[in-house]
Length: 72
Image 1 (cartoon, rainbow, N blue to C red):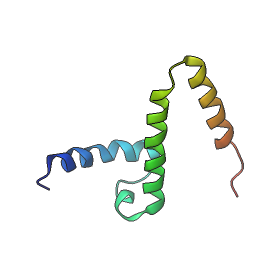
Image 2 (image 1 turned 90 degrees about the horizontal axis):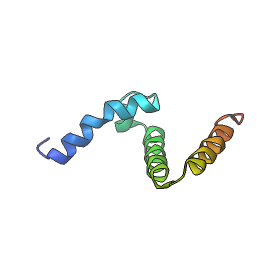
Image 3 (image 1 turned 60 degrees about the vertical axis):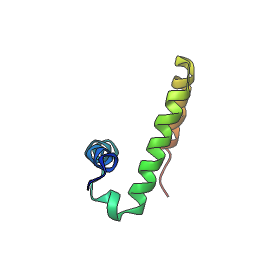
């Protein structure tokens, strides 16, 4: 691993895995984990684009509602 950019990205995997509640190895063998990571990354980017406290509150209310929906 001679590429410093790759090294920096790999160094962040343990923290991202902990946030998502998955093992680090999932990033290398588990497509579902990769999809979750992509979604979490997009959520973080979108969160940063919300400029008001009310907008962030509404986003959290909606996410909580979706999270509480029964699983199929």
